[in-house]
Length: 193
Image 1 (cartoon, one colour):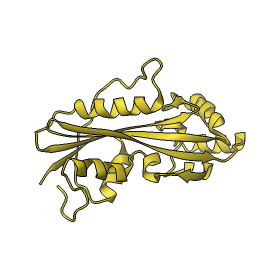
Image 2: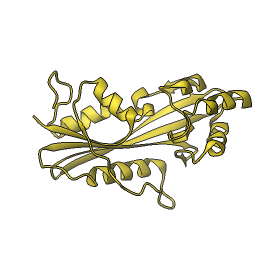
Image 3: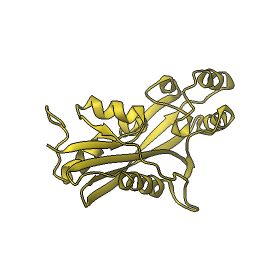
Image 4: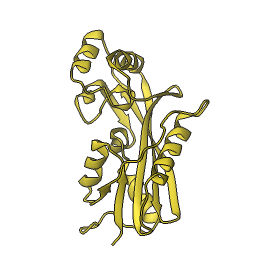
């Protein structure tokens, strides 16, 4: 049985992987997540996912799953806000707009590694200042790419999603299962890990 290692401290990624019955160990990578000058959002999340997978030491028979998610509005990366002021600014920019959420996923088993990016379109409702104030008061925007969480109160800000919902939450499960399968590891079993 292949042991699964999730290279992430994200509670959302933990929950998503657990939802499909995967047993895993968490090992948190320590890498610089700063964008490279001129790097587009898709290349950015792919590079970080690969970097996170590589930063985890593993045995040859352990499958590492690593991911990175970002919000992309007009090819501008909207990462995690520094504070409420930064979160307010991001929410104002997203108001009434359609943006992209990209998650880079990398899986590694021994010397074999695969990586891909999942993209989902998300439509925001038009936000007035009272709604932004309400959402900031929830405390939810901090620590979230783009300053919102679809799986929480932030769902009230979203009018539509075109693509993978689990991608917007932080881990496109269909892509994780596919990439692992291409490394001959079946994640959807009754007796994982």
